[in-house]
Length: 369
Image (cartoon, rainbow, N blue to C red; front, side):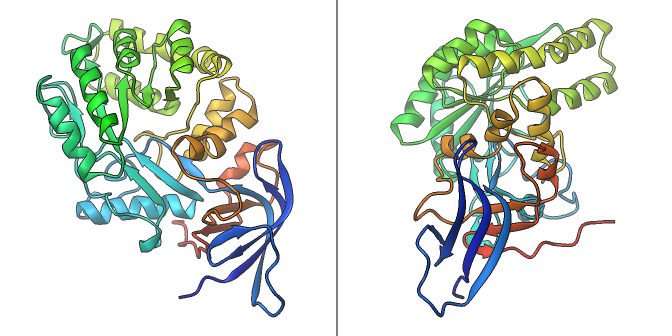
């Protein structure tokens, strides 16, 4: 089926401070040259962004993917919820399975970058969720997941100890560094889950492309990340969910107090990361229903970074870091339009007026009432 010609008018937000009045979509791609006369043209009006990004989502788990469905159907249902919300790029840093591999515009769904299965040290993650490997097994396991996924590998750098006395390293720092190196040599990218300061330190030394959470990172850590070009996905809402889960399993007052300390310090850490020049990305983790990355973007702004920076974490900056073009000549037309300027009112991200994936206007599924 031939993609329609679209005339996109209004305020096209190429970047936070670069605004164009119009563009065209011809053959599924963006152009600033008007097509020849006689083309059948569909008009799109509004404040237009490149497709939103959820840089840390687990399509096979979390809210919004019915548990009774098979793995592949669950992942597609979650991706459909993202699509209907204008989230046109999803990075899945780990999954209990590989069901998300292959999801994309060819199936009428968002572009998905998946790292295949979680890689964790033995006994260092949720039971049954990860492929558990030793330090010596980690590099080969990483290469297998790279081959099975779409460009990324994810390792769990630390996990809460059974005693509740803090965070335990999942892998020796040297083992992480070797795994990152072999994945990079194979042309892949590497994400490391790191909560506590010791794991953050080990992750920085290993040299991955991104660190997930970085909950107890210090000012020094953020400076080092910025210097090394390591991005951070803070997943602010995920820590609130983790706190609730920890309380439900009967954690001690001391353990809950440590989590509360982490929650209280998150806004300052987000501001420090931003001021240090770290690339921040918005990610829902499993804390928010699929399709609600806008809430994480709002949370980033509430932490004290400028609206433009919070919006970039779920659009321009995230797309660029993940290797996808934004609104530029010849790029695939992944666009989302709003009735108001999202830079001024981030909450408008919850209600896109038009969604365009790969040059096609999306007919959204009816919302549950």
